[in-house]
Amino acid sequence: MKKFTALFLIAIMSLTLFACGKKEVTVDTDALLAELSGNAMFFDANLAQISEKALKNEVGIDPENYVSATYFVGSGFTGEEYGVFECTDEKTAEIVEECLEARVDRQRESLESYAPEAVFRLDNAVIEQSGKYVAIIVAEDFNAAGKLLNSYLG
Image (cartoon, rainbow, N blue to C red; front, side, top):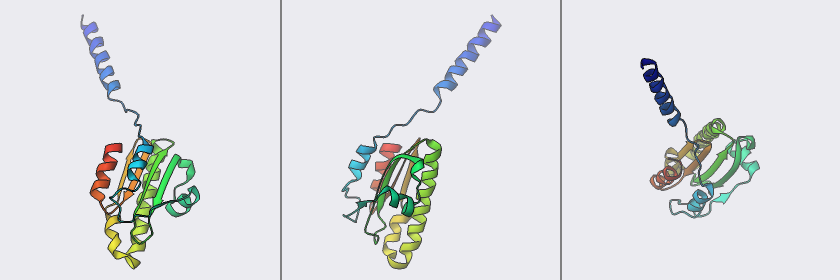
């Protein structure tokens, strides 16, 4: 009877651990991009999508690290931009997140000299990573940006 009880407890503990495993995250990137497009959280009304080549050269993200990526930048004087990435896996998503953090640092350094009034947007950039997805929003209304990303990646 003691052996049966011990085996029963081991089975229950194993099932409990299995149930606590990581769940695969799925993000509707098209819906997120649709909400970002023309959103009132941006001061700059003319954010433009950049090419994959520009994404690699300007933002520093290698196409090998993502399955799909969409990135928009502002005029340059506002520091505003946003992007959504579906990466190949969680490890590459972490690499993309690091690249985005480095991008924000470079943009901040650059804007400090010619558009210091825009630096607060970069200081409050929202970068979220969940599973194999990463998103960035640098916007006038950084509180709304944070809430939006949290609703998709939270």
